[in-house]
Length: 329
Ligand SMILES: O=C(O)CCC(=O)C(=O)O
Ligand SMILES: [Fe+2]
Image (cartoon, rainbow, N blue to C red; front, side):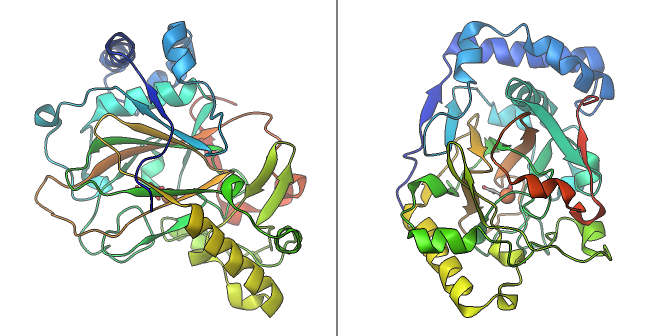
């Protein structure tokens, strides 16, 4: 798998300092990155960003469906130990929550879920004891299978942002763009049909208990700018589909593996992924559990008026979950 051929958008020192200083001021004004007042102040603060920063934060503009924003400075010695679980993070790395929220707000509206990580708008991705072989951000020993984030839900993010605080072992995030695949037209047509559902993942215990009937959803969709995808094989009951459809799905998986790139994030990097175009995952690794583990901050962003999804999604129940927005929609 090629390593970091992802487009890099450099932030020079002045731009990085501008973004970090604005975040620090917001945090000082509101005390906590989780404060509703801080969230409400994000759009107004973003409006103060210079054209240079704004330009670096323009939408994803290549068929890779992603870019890496590079140039922010994380001081490892100031960070404190990597928490062992998202629930024990408290306000550790809070400045980076706010930086990530500013970056997110310049692209759209940050969203959160009541049922995930206490409804926080910035999640912490750290390996956690006892979760090594799950298909969630807390795992380590296993390959995190390429997936669309929150694929089970019609209100899922359009953009997924991962900000790296620590990654001493160069553990790569994987990314594969549907726009780089060469799938036969017959397979595309087959995968555009709603055949099987995508069930809530293990990060959503409440949604997994939802009693409603799972609705089949299409895997591929022909949007005006090209194909988009909704894909999470680890939570898709593939054996409910007929053999022909399963073979088409298998060929899609093979194509995604063929075009997959490995992006090893450095501290300060923000990976921006178009969640309609790219599936992401992570290579397996051995957790350290000594306070120096890999640590990412994650945000999800909704972008209004994007024609990237079938209209039929609007009728889905979303397994009883609703996305929260950082300020009233
Ligand atoms: O750890 C990573 O690189 C990605 C994990 C992941 O899938 C996510 O945070 O959504
Ligand atoms: Fe993910």
